[in-house]
Image 1 (tube, rainbow, N blue to C red):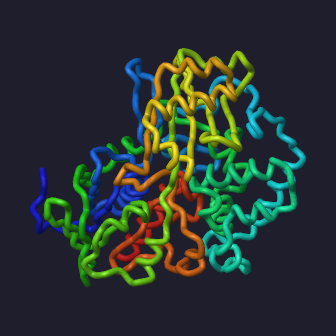
Image 2 (cartoon, rainbow, N blue to C red):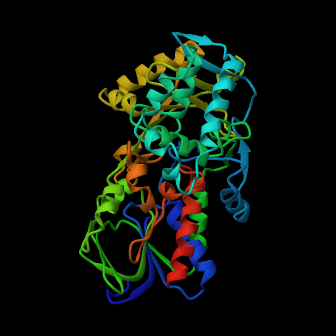
Image 3 (cartoon, helix red, strand yellow):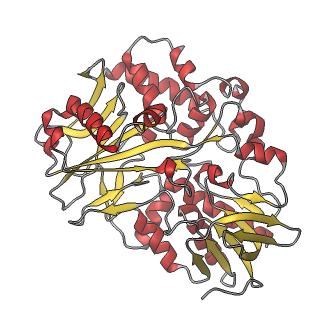
Length: 450
């Protein structure tokens, strides 16, 4: 049933990803009398968490999939909804591989740990609520992470590895497109280098049995005061003095006391505002680069790498592939290797046909796993940059200089408009945990102003 246009909601939430859902859940917990509307342009909920099932029921997670021991809100929801987790990778403790100069390399631990220690020393100095106020912010925000790493006093290939582990692998954008300040903020926000990049006791420690999308669905199913509408694109927002008018693509209007934009800033830029946003806010929203990750899955008849004492985890310093992980799920006989391609490499490989992309990537996989990697039964890819409603994956990042210019306006409400999404989280920025925290923050913000 669709209500009449003149019905006014207490809160209208745009976006049904983890941040929007977390905001609705928190609002309902705080006030049992609120009338909430959630508008989603896509035909599903979950945002950047999205799964596919093969014909035999094998789960393929196309989007956000990992949970770490510090992700308290995710773990709380998993427990609340009686979901189960398992450790990543699920089956073995084989060897991680590092590829450089056309060969598998042994990781020089002393050099690696020394450089990590230096980076963590810098990240520990970042104020997560106000990174732009750091005494070195002006300098760090105008130099690229690539330039910083190039000037670091080491000739070891480990320097190249760590650069790629951070940018593009963490921030999902090339190191010449992201500032040192943005990179350090991301690492600091996610608990330091080791936690952010690790499976073992790190941010990639757990997966949810059956997929993270279930958490989104369970939240939606639990909502009692929130009406969720799918397939309606918001085209205009009118932030009037005492109400917000939301216009969708069919020219229908919805009226609310407050509006939560639980969207990537890249997507917010596609919405027209009748009462123009302040110039600095428009400039801030326009200063985000889309996340540039391409996630590709190769399905095999079995996880053959286990018998070869390989974990399925690879970090590569050359070629299209930056990372490989074992994404095999418990109870399945099939083996799944998931490959990540980022930034300019993603752009370049998308110029080829799907069959050509498959061949190029399999050729690289044979460098890590031998000829057995050629026997993939299925090839599945999902290009998030083509998803109009998410604006790329993993996360949007501020361009060079934007933190210092516009940081003080970051995640600040404007009139009756409130901003959520993982890009507005001080903690676990870029992860589903960050999205939840942002949703909870903005719900508290709305409650105080109702």
